[in-house]
Image (cartoon, rainbow, N blue to C red; front, side, top):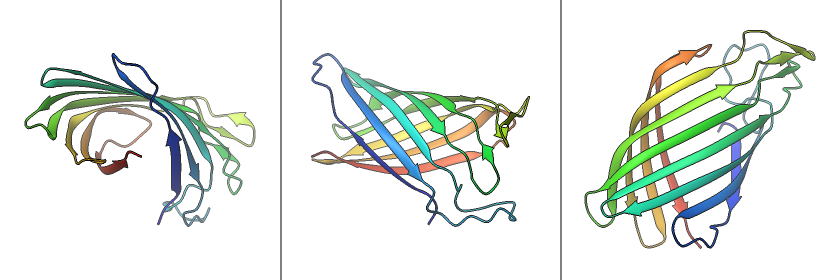
Length: 170
């Protein structure tokens, strides 16, 4: 297993749109060795406040998220990866009452990294990704499959992102 993330949130009592503020904390629980080029874990803590919004209009839906990641120092390397801002959007279409799909887009931009307290100029990262989401809702559980392809990447490798997410409502 890699690093473990734990989050909590609460739906705000707004009638026109669903708004869910949340806070996630990523703990450095994954294996990490400074001597390795690639690791399962990051050896650094992240705290990420975020806000999700959802609006349904007939068979269409609009989902948006704003996330900010406060990224802390990796004590083994004295590197601070640089805080990140992520903006995400999805326009969904209901195929059935419980199944929805649609195109999605994500944009991420980060601050420069720091090492030993010195900012590394030109190390900021930026990525624009486009793809699709597939969403199925059970009575209290919703499952989302997301696929994104990196259309643009600066100081990051281009690639593919595939995520399966399950959310249980109490």
